[in-house]
Length: 366
Image 1 (cartoon, helix red, strand yellow):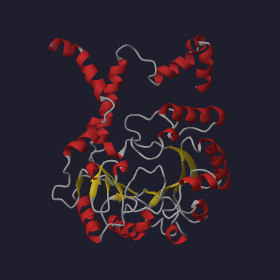
Image 2 (spheres, rainbow, N blue to C red; image 1 turned 180 degrees about the vertical axis):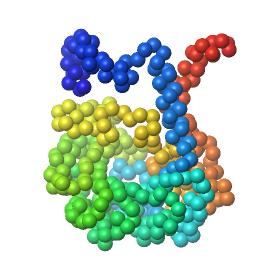
Image 3 (tube, helix red, strand yellow; image 1 turned 90 degrees about the vertical axis):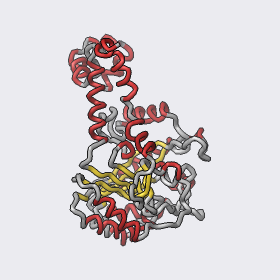
Image 4 (cartoon, rainbow, N blue to C red; image 1 turned 90 degrees about the horizontal axis):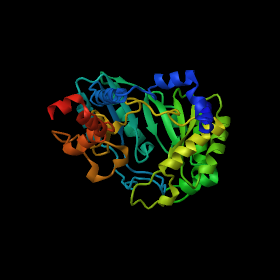
C-alpha cells in the first residue's frame, strides 16, 4: 500500500484508477459513503466505553518501591530517593482489596517502580499470594532498568509468571552511559548487557523487549544499535523498539532535546520506508479497544508502595494525582480525577456531541 501511496504523490490518477486499491480503501473505511463516518465513530465509541467499563478484568501496575538506583536526566518521576518498600500489612491489604472484585475473571499485573528489582522479595511474596487466589493470574510484565537482573533472579522468573520484560538501552556504550547512569555516578551499559545475555541464554520462557528511549541526542544511533542487538541475540525471543522521550512541561530535561510529534512520526515512517522497520504497534493506528491504556479502564490502577492508587504510571509519586488508597474503607477518594481519566479523555466525546447536535432527531427536538 505504501508503494501505491508514494506513486499517488506524483500522479493521483494512478490511485483513482486503481480499482483494487480503491476497494481496499472502502473495505478499511478510509473511503465511506455520506453519513457512514458518523455511524462508524459512534460504533467505535461504544466499543471503547464497553472495554473501559468491562468488569471482568482487573489490570494493576504495582510499584513495590519508588526507589531507583539510576538517575536518568529525562525521568518523569521525582521519588527515586524514596526508600520505602511495600510492607507486609500493605501486601495483605492489597490481596483483600483484590478479593472484593467479585466479577473479575482475569487478573493482569505488571511490576514497575522506581526500580522494582530493588524490592524483589516483595515481588516474590506478592506473587505467591496472587497465585493462591482463584483468578487467572498469568503473563505478568516487568519494567526494569536491568542493572540488578542477576542470574539468581533470572532463575525465578518463570515461577513468578513473568512473561514480558522491558529493559532500556539508549544507545551504544558511550551514549547509553551518558544518559542512564547510577545514582552515585557510574556506567551501567556493560552490566545490563551482561544480564540480558544471561537472560537470553537461560531457560526463561518469556519475551524481552529492549526499549531505546529516543530523542535528538541519540536518534542517529537507533538503527545501528537495533541491528547489533538483533544480530547478537538472533534466534531468541528478544525485540528492539524505540520509545519517545517526551519531557513534561517544566521538566529540567531540555525540551529542545525531545522530538515533537511530527518529528517522531517522520522518524518512524522513514525507518519503515527506507529500512523496512515497522513502527511499534504497526504502521496504522490501533482500533478503539486495542491497546487501551490502563488509565482509561474503570478497573485499572497503578499501586504505590503505601497502597496509594493512581490511574497513570506517569503520575507515580505525585500526591496531587492520587485517586485513593487501598487502606481506606472506601478506597477511591478522588472521584473526579478517576472520572476524568475514564471519560474525560475519551477521544470520541467531542465528535459524538457534534454528531448528536446535527442528527435529525436533534433538529426535530429543536
